[in-house]
Image (cartoon, rainbow, N blue to C red; front, side):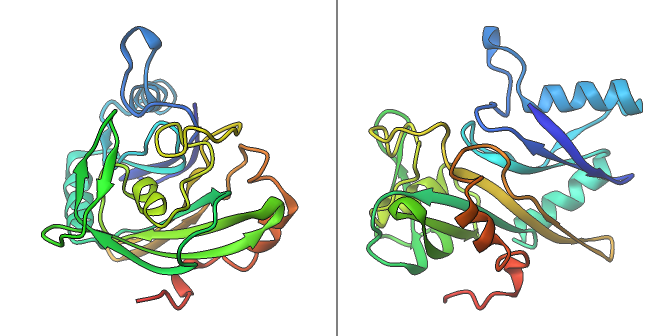
Length: 229
């Protein structure tokens, strides 16, 4: 389900596997939060754990949990101020209407649990992105969300004609061994210390391809890129 990447007295960073729900799924078993909490209590005698943000079931990668209430409150404020930088990797096998830029608009519920991007800008979802050609006529997307809407990145790429490979909702006709969205990097300042975490995916045949590995050598500090406005 997960691997512990690092921990301090205040927080723990884990790597979530693809296909794991964040919350419990009833008879289908415990979700990520319950499993991390259980291991932290068993292995490190840490009784309290606070979820800070979440990932969709299909999404793998970095997730942050607070180990005490004060830290949870601080992180809550950081996320509210958009002071936690998050970077994601996605793969699509469709040609986008634009290859880099800004995707912005309000989001609304659609059908079958889906969401759609609107033209209005009352409380918009905002995503910056780059894309790069890779093998198999696919494109790798590096995404930087500036808001935390449900399905934001999945809807953003779908809106430019490039739904994520293996996405069961927005690209249901695609055949893949997983949904190709991965929480790749986190960067934030906590109590005066700057933290940054980078984690390429080790799940999925396309993420493990040589063309992806070669490209990620150029993207190992995504916060230094000249992001499109």
